[in-house]
Amino acid sequence: MKNIGFLSFGHWTDHPQSGTRSASDALLQAIDLAVAAEELGADGAYFRVHHFAQQYASPFPLLAAIGARTKKIEIGTGVIDMR
Image 1 (cartoon, rainbow, N blue to C red):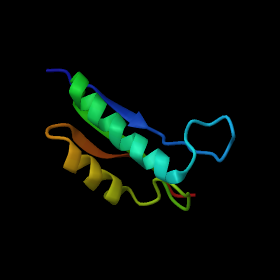
Image 2: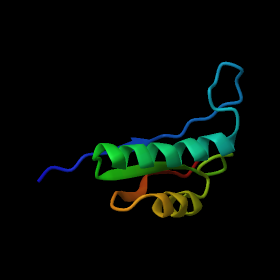
Image 3: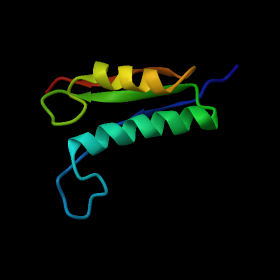
Image 4: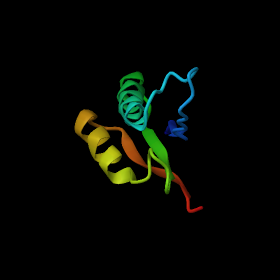
């Protein structure tokens, strides 16, 4: 059996051209992305941890929110950036 998942880097910048206006938007979009991926049949959703950044600095609240909205997709961290 093959599994398919994705790794989200969760970049956010306060730029006028960005569709993500705040760190909060980045987190809400991550939740929506995981929900949509599960609906499409993906098996995993992994998120890069950005220590000392305004978004994704603490992955566990994000993973808990995703877990509350999904049923069977595997969630976790994929890359831990310890700058």
